[in-house]
Length: 118
Image (cartoon, rainbow, N blue to C red; front, side):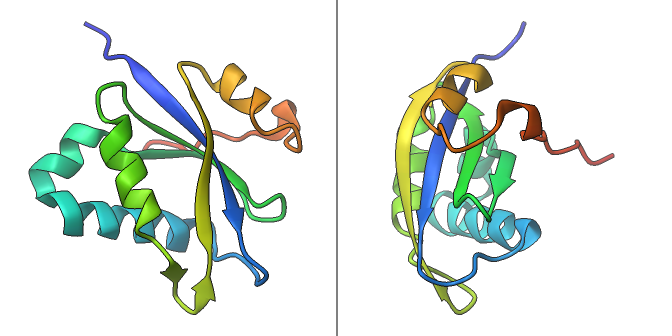
């Protein structure tokens, strides 16, 4: 059985340089673990699908029933390393193609999906 997914299109609002992809992913991961623990974090199914610091945008995937907990965790992040930032969820959709419609500054051909680690 295939699980349904949701894609959150987000804008990163800051006046400083954004952190690298691993740093950004780990900050969200740590915040989810702090708020919900291991079990809650596994239910959310967080995955950083696309991250573009030069365009200040990203696409995050989660389980369809866990959009609210993920949005709550994103809202509590105010700083990553020494970079002050706000994470604004522009839209939520069921496909990457529609999530890209919320971020017109991104070129759909340059959205790279993160590889699964083995």
